[in-house]
Length: 146
Image (tube, one colour):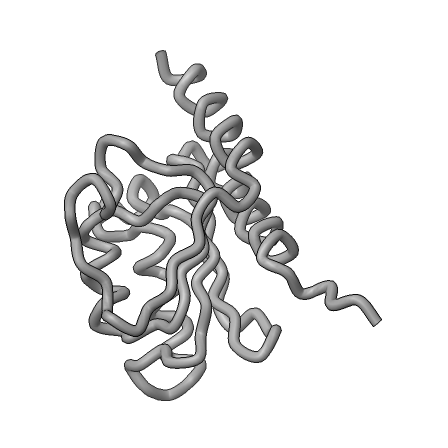
């Protein structure tokens, strides 16, 4: 039997969150955290609603997943996020010891790769999953702002 729980499957769930952010006037970034093929946290950017520059989708998801698990470490978890994490989020992901990060679109200006931010040495990274869909949503959002 074919495994339906692929990186694309869970990235589609993160895209649903990103679309929710878009509808709320937030930068359309969505995230889900998964353990054992089960979504344990889902979130999207809330910086405008909460008036909080730290309320990125990843930060919200980390908190939610840690609460679900009853501990601060996210070992054996995977984060699916529609945009490459910034250095703030990458730093939090480092401390969470998350096992895997999967992102859609790259952030050439503010992403952790460009900024040279280190992740935990055991964290695996997969990039460009549903990159086109993630990028198109981001571009559509900024077209409405310009």
